[in-house]
Image (cartoon, rainbow, N blue to C red; front, side, top):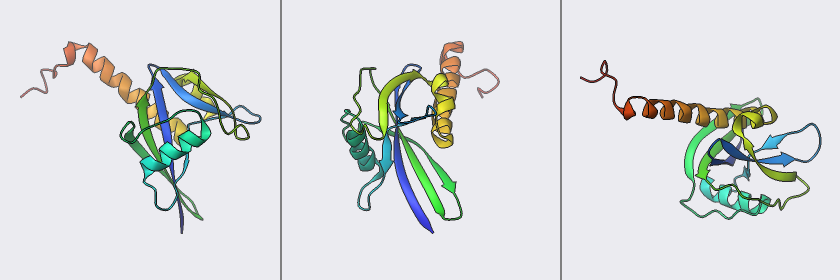
Amino acid sequence: MKRVVKSRLIALHKNKVLVLQKVGRPLRYTLPGGVKKKKETEEETLIREVGEEIKLRLSPGEVQFYLSHIKKGNSGAIIKNYFLIQLKPSSIKVKEKHKFEAAFWVDWKEALPFMDKSDRLAVRSYFKSFGRKAKKNGKNGGQVPPRLAM
């Protein structure tokens, strides 16, 4: 059974996520990243692939592992490892123009309909969990609710 391992970057700034617009129609977005080579770690794959696709230089330890998504099929499995980074939004140039038209900072909710299923799940998962944490911290000042304090 064949196994393909990919690394993807979820670059964030407030409610925005960095996406790459794929060449062609219909409109499709993807997250920066790509396929792991044999002797690379998942983080090394991410750093190399992001550097090949766009003008953004990442350093080891700068990104934080977030989650993995496994898609199993008859021919094998695709494992996507997602990493997080907080960045200030700036204009980012695309290097691989044959694959991508542009890199954009887009509100995460607006980007979801144009992403593949696993990218959409990873981005939605992050922002939904982040929203719950923000609400909890805003309410009660982050204190434990009385019914849970024992």
